[in-house]
Amino acid sequence: MAGRANQGIVWLSAIALLFPGAASLAVGNDSVRPEVAGDFPVASDVRLAGDLKQTRFILDLDKKIDIHAFLLTDPYRAVIDIPQVSFRLANKAGEAGRGLIKAFRYGLVMPGGSRIVFDLAGPAKIEKAYVLDAANGQPSRLVVELEAVDRAAFNRLLTRSSNPEPAKDADSSGPVADKPASLTGLADGRLVVVLDPGHGGIDNGTQASTGEAEKDLVLAFAVALRDRIEQGGKFRVVMTRTDDTFIPLAERVRVARNKGAALFVSIHADALPRHEGDARGATIYTLSDRASDREAERLAEAENKADAIGGVDLTEEPTEVADILIDLAQRETRTFSNRFAQLLMSEMKISTRMHKHPLKSAGFRVLKAPDVPSVLVELGYVSNKADLRQMTSEEWRSKTVRSVAKAVETFLAKRTVSVAPTDPK
Image 1 (tube, helix red, strand yellow):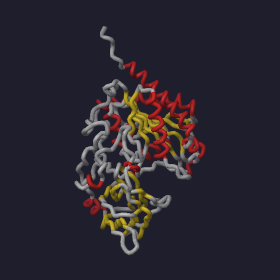
Image 2 (cartoon, rainbow, N blue to C red):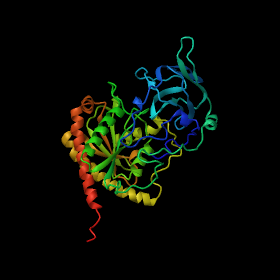
Image 3 (cartoon, helix red, strand yellow):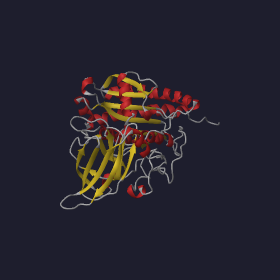
Image 4 (cartoon, helix red, strand yellow):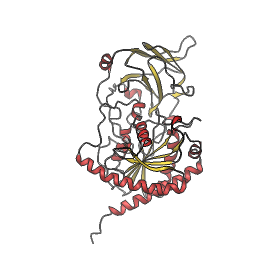
């Protein structure tokens, strides 16, 4: 996977020691699941103390670890990077804040590395961030002390530019070149399909009232879909993630472009706030400058916040549509995306319940590769009991995977014919 995942963050040279897996985020099928890579430190309890002037965060650990702290803005955030940790905290830990910390999130952000992101109530500085040794019957503790400052002081404190070392692609010995996509696929002639299970790691996505997280539901579906497509041997499947790892939105797009993907399918599961009532069924989204309705706009806004949730600085994130040539290419790509969306809807409605308005569009950042036909599929609503039962059902998953795989195969078969070389004879 190409680099520039966390632009705007100064990564100290010690980061390689902190995160030994930082330069090898897997985007293929052969990644090692980090949770089985060894025994990781365990975080067992967390607490907050203080007020809007000074706030302290304390995390109990079973062993001492290294840390790296920095600030981000728009919105105000403080971020703590640590080696991979097994978080065994109480349910809903982090949802309720105190003082300068409105809320906090935690989880895997790359193989070998975890992250804690604090949503701040206002501009603040990290006065201290340290780890105490176990002593006097107390476990090791990660302590973060925050202190309120004004906006000007916060801006002076912000860590400024310098890109991290480019990550290496799982299938190559060096950094991935930023090459445009094509229909040629690999040397063996197979077209490439990129499957993108949404969210992951520190970003849970939506969550059911019974605890099921979107990131787990969509990963299980994507893995089953990958296996189904590859059974036919006609196409090669690349996944943006194959485990519980956070991948920035721009990196998901780059995976598709760097692999020369013929199709990009991002897989998600929605949830409605209680005050908006109930809804159910699968929905297929394509990219547009204007949302097709308010619900599509709401969903795009929520999905586009994934990088902020993961603690990525977006202030220097480049736009995909940089000039008129790319804009023209994207118009053609959108036509193919819409054709696939129609085909996918026709197949899916045979095996699963669809939303009353199954085809929608909005400005999803993850669909903005200018030269790769892309759709975002919402499998259903985790806020709806019937949809949730389906998404946790092996029988439903198998049936729906068959439908999606058939749509992929039909769409790509037509595109293969359209670009087949003519016989020189």
